[in-house]
Image (cartoon, rainbow, N blue to C red; front, side):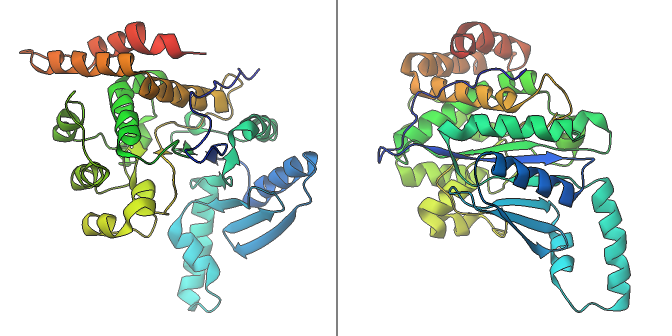
Length: 333
């Protein structure tokens, strides 16, 4: 049975609008068309008149939701490219058949929701239950699987102080998150979630770090010109200052400008009855509570500075235990 979804401390944007969040779910053992039909039926149960369109062999779109279209696809850019091209050489057509077989065996089907108001997140929990009942599988079901669930929460504000606080909260809680989530080995090996560089951590987690918005973006981009971070800030920075981002990031083909954080750490365990959106969302909501708690956040920064000055600093178990017992436990649902 799904647990309650934790409330965030800032449910509205600076414009007093309800914040939205996009959800991305990767899963296996169901075909593209099966997942599309499940999403369509789910929306119809909410009173939505849906329409299914096919953009290529590897992409489907379900329209009708006021929030926007739901996209269902194989998350593999080359497969999408092949599927959209109508005129291929014979050898390439043969290759496509082989790639399609690989995709159906290994590449996940990905569901990408439109930006949903926070008040609609419980609907996603219902969709997950329906996918599980239909036979969807997650990462731990097979050594070949490396599936994730990603969140794109709209930022409550785009000022430098807010973004700094959220970055600091996330970086302080990173090891705590790893312990709770335990991302599967295959996703780590594939460089899906590389750690933040030590020099960046030391700069951002200093209590005196108080950058302008421009400096905050430059600091991040200089040390992290990649999407492969557990908290990917590139979509937000492209939304705020595309010119600055392009100075540091070479390949922006997959970076979509949007006013959101991009939380990429969790795996998908959709086949397990004790897993759901709450498993991912509640950890993220705890990060937001830490970001909005000045006392707790500063306590983390002070402890970090003390630890790094030790002859043998412990940012492993000792740090996780500190975060769990003295910081994050007070925010748990």
